[in-house]
Amino acid sequence: MSDDSRPSPAGARPGAPVAVVIPAAGRGVRLGPGAPKALRTLNGTPMLVHAVRAMAASRAVSLVVVVAPPDGAGEVTSLLDAHALPERTRFLVVPGGESRQESVRLGLDAVPPGHDVVLVHDAARPLVPVETVDAVIGAVREGAAAVVPALPLADTVKEVEPAAVAGAPEPVLATPDRSRLRAVQTPQGFDRATLVRAHETVTDDVTDDASMVEQLGEPVVAVPGHEEAFKVTRPLDLVLAEAVLARRRLTDGF
Ligand SMILES: Nc1ccn([C@@H]2O[C@H](COP(=O)(O)OP(=O)(O)OP(=O)(O)O)[C@@H](O)[C@H]2O)c(=O)n1
Ligand SMILES: C[C@](O)(CO)[C@H](O)COP(=O)(O)O
Image 1 (cartoon, protein in one colour):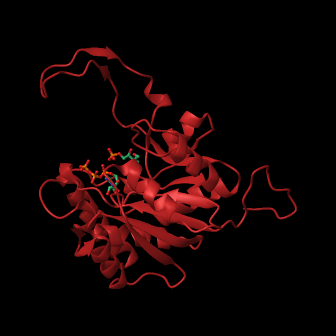
Image 2: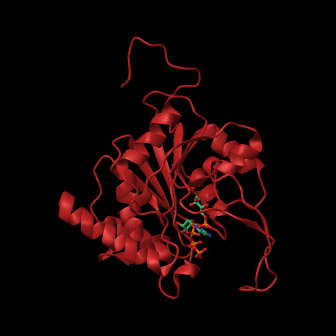
Image 3: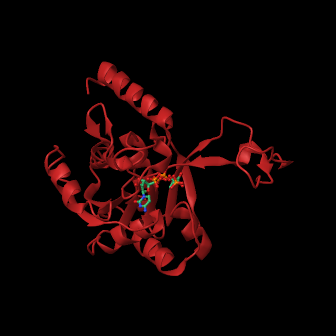
């Protein structure tokens, strides 16, 4: 609970307008043949629409920038026009790039001035609860430059010498201390200027945006993630996602 008599911490951005960039330009190769992953349906609704609604569920979010497959911006705009979103949320659609990193950068370029907090959220994580979105926004507004939702690992993890041929035995090199490891999700939240600087500076291939901020030497903090924020990557994840939606319909009525 906030205490108005307390001074804001250095770097705090209380009430700062929030924009979300949703990279949705991937093919979804690991999901198997079919439409681009973001356009595949869960219970009849495209995954991207679920993801946009998950972001728009936060009252803090005023703009969603969707990064569409390079030749699919028109189709994605029509799709979003055809599905109900909260009135307070504006959306823009821009074409994406060859890599997730490039798609995020193209989305970030389209965020108009004035949005000092930017979230980056995978279209492939359509079911993240609003509590997680708000926890990330809250931590950035309280002054963190970069925030990731993260979960402890359920499995023991091994470092291996990767095999040259898929399926061949791989020598185990070490067993890292699992208690210090986290599986990181999205939305990841950023002070906008820091995220822009990271995308201007870091050219290495990376798998998430927070690691670009780490490379700048800026601090990144983790807040609790949520098991329903899992990424739809392989066919079994579709089964799990539809099961989560079925349970929500029973318990929440939607
Ligand atoms: N060129 C790309 C590649 C990925 N993404 C987006 O980045 C998110 C996370 O990526 P991932 O789950 O790996 O999606 P894909 O790249 O589509 O999956 P795959 O690697 O199986 O092809 C997804 O929302 C995806 O649409 C993107 O916007 N542009
Ligand atoms: C950003 C991300 O979802 C955090 O877990 C993940 O790194 C994306 O990785 P992918 O290989 O593009 O699925």
